[in-house]
Length: 563
Image 1 (cartoon, one colour):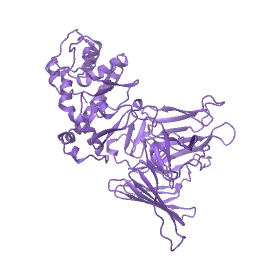
Image 2 (cartoon, one colour):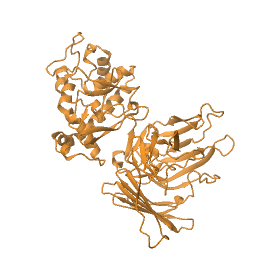
Image 3 (tube, one colour):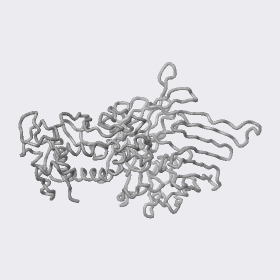
């Protein structure tokens, strides 16, 4: 990942991962500078067997000279997955410019929520029934409470108010569907004066936000992970930069440069989430994240779904491979999801390879066959090259090789046509009618299936859509969708471990063939002895997968891959 500094010098991160795709090193460099591999702003990590961070080393640019300054050399001490305290190696002096490692003990409530974190001066955290913080008490050096932060939420967990008070002032922030209001008051002001009114600060736009205080449009430059990197506006004669943000891999902001004041009311930065300036946390709706420690301080609400992962881990520690979805799970950058607005479907997040230079999707939901009335099998498919994995959001979300392209499906044969070994270009050579029938029979509601999946995360669907037969059927099909994804993953694993040398296109075709019998374009003129059929048959025989007769392939709805 590469960016630039004000003088045009490039800044770059190179990433190193372990066998489980967890980030081991985020190595910072400045290509073209006098000391390119300078390690300024690098992070180095290790993990325990539960997937918790064991050690973290973090560096910064030096105040003088050219040698990177180590600002963190942290040792994580656990009971189970709960972080008890942060300690330092013998002889290492605490550097508060990174994590302020005062080596105090942390305490938790019965639900696994952090309630005391004295390293940050937090003497108490109270939670509501959703395990979201409702009151935070912050102390000074003498352990006296000097400020408090109160949060108010809707029943679905959406934050609607934050009240921050200290010994002198109170600041109220109201959240209303993206509109953000602010009201400040003092405890020693005019007794006869009317209380101050809340003032609208900003409203988000597709390019950034409109600042009602400055009466200007502010434009955000956002990277592929949703991080706000640059904010700028038109000052009347030219473009003026309002704020620049660069981040360590785990989200802590680079310090020592980019000292622009920015907009104190607008704090949406790392992965587009709101920074809580009182505590240094990022609010990910269902959990709050500490970028200086690289972990959440609440148990994952979806912990049962990820038994292999620490219940406090951020993004499965797979930094650079995706984003954290609302504090629930890793959303890989090559996946997408959609939202419904009235009678229209909107792309909410597109695969990285399907975005333009501004980060906007290069296709609509309708382009891939998703509509509010169901799935259109005649829509486009996402493929690699002239053929590829038959990807959609509910079948497979693994890595996509090479550059993903949109390919329109076309000329599907009639359900009455049988497979035959013709060599004419227009023939139905080896086209698997079973797959086409399955598309017709079960894919009509696939678009709704994805919406139902998102409803579990609090997305709303109009009553008109809820009443459709597709929606009702979709609620019954979610388990089947999950099974499809598991089967596709197994098919990919079997092909990758077979040891058979194939180019990527052939490998994709073999995976599809093992998964559900699907063969590539019916115009390809494949014969029974083609490499796709030969390799696929060999892999199925080796792994005990029944090889169905032609007639069975035409009538069987799914292929069972052994566990």
